[in-house]
Image (cartoon, rainbow, N blue to C red; front, top):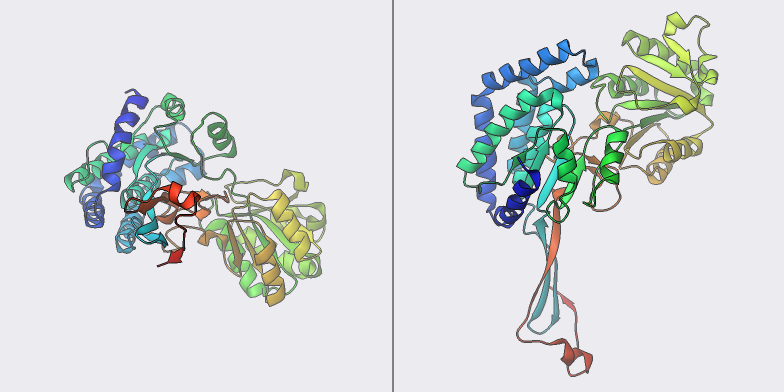
Length: 431
């Protein structure tokens, strides 16, 4: 397959997809959900091939967790599809309606972006979510999943694509690429692909950004923080931290760094360390942190590191350091974080508001787990990814992040010359 040729065909189809009715797109998604449930035995059989291959090749445990597609994952993606169907149509929304002069009316209309290339990690559920979001928002997706989920992705794509064609969407509205070298081909498709959304490691995202002229949206690292303030409720703090670390350890919104107020560290840290150990989590603390714990590291399962070694683990490990207060926590997050999702635990409203206002991240939370940073949990139905950009879309990218807009100006013979000479004048009236 020559990727550029296929993408060129897709580019010509994109306006037809954008023009499909809300009813057609919803019917397509309903059919996708039905077909996925009807053919679940086939899907699970193909997923077993990927799991067996992962076991043979010694694939890391955190990746294996992502590539597993079972009854629970199927139920989640179907629920996401059904939620998408219930959402308001993102296409055709009028966000500006202004009369410039008599019989000269300007409107700003929400429209699909067009052809979107999404390169994502070894998560079959991501293929379903991305496809569904693109269908619902009238976009044409080019999909490249991780090689570890080759068999699962292949059957999922076949099921979804055949269902949308059956529902009346045009042939060529979706494309799957499987070979690694096809990523480099896709990167050369500027002028044909309107947007790239890479999901993966920092190194991978940087590679995409540095090797294409296509606009790129997404995030690299997911170094999420929780700051435990001196006015924190310990009974809230410990369950929140445990959930943020272990509920799905391999996710980009799992907590990786804990910042703890010095005033409470002596009392809080031993309780936290005990809870972390009970849940199989290793604490990697600065010397100041570990000095507050027992000399026996086996008791609390910790090791001492320098904060320059703090990173995204995607494993049952969490870093910790002490801070003097909320301002030091904010400074650490803004300079050392990834601007993804960061949370404060406090009962002090003024401190909370300062944190929420000054932390420069896509998601800023109060007294809750960072794991809530998710399109489905936000009521978006699903997400195509998380964006730490400040332009166009930020945070979980759902339907609204997959539309842009165009201006329509409808007149009755008006010419600019009349306004330039003063023969006519604008009166700008919002309708």
